[in-house]
Amino acid sequence: MRSSNPVFSRRGFSRDSGYAGFNTAPQAGGNPYAQAPTNPYATNPYAQQDTQYGAPQAPTRSNVMTIDDVVTRTAMTLGTVVVGAVLAWLALPVDHANINKSYGIAGGAALVAFVLAMIQSFKRKPVPALILGYAALEGVFLGVISSAVTTYVSAGAVPQAVLGTMAVFAGVLIAYKTRLIRVNRRFVGFVMAAAIGFVLLMLVNMLFSVFGGGGGLGFRSGGLGIVFGIIGIILGACFLAIDFKQVEDGITYGAPREESWLAAFGLTMTLVWIYLEALRLISILQGND
Image (tube, rainbow, N blue to C red; front, side, top):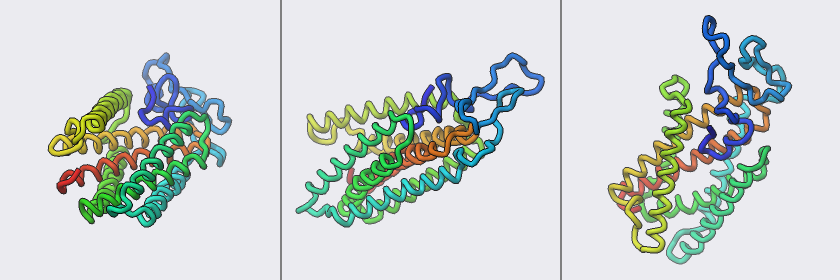
């Protein structure tokens, strides 16, 4: 089973037989024939395994991924998003004379960012230039959208969405570390099914909106919009838990240091999702979708 996040579905953060770390090594006194967990980095000479149970041991070399690497790369990627958003906010005004032009540039940036994300997702190794390019262009899109919400909805909407995103991140991290959230196959399967249904409904709503005019089926406005906004944030929180699990597995099993770029990429994509859902929810609550 693979992650719903495409950057974690490649080699390094998943196994053909399932998520690394989802199975546990047999305990003393248990079934001696129980299958031990497989290290997806068995070919990595720096990822050591216990000879009795196949359980991973601490890496002995310095070129394996650590939590510091993940934090550093994530800070760089998110920082690039923020810089792109600030520059777009300042350079692309959303007044009545320029809003169509700014929206056009933002839409183009979002499209190119999506293409870069897909290219990176299908590559076997991370390419920092692609990841940072995605972050910069995604920042341009977020900057214009955030500026429009601030101008036409509420001056406090963006800070509220940022704080809400930070709160979701902190809450999920605490819940994951204290094992209030347990990421296993059933959890991942449920989240993936819910995400597919959510995205399909949003696509149908968008098609009705484009070809039928108005607000489509109402999934992004009014009472239904509030419900689906909350669902979107909850799905984003579930994605974060899956991301944390797979980053933890990558560190445990001795992933190469370069994989920290993929961790940063995936976490950034999830946080952007949560921020956009939070911003839309706040817009609806304050009277404009």
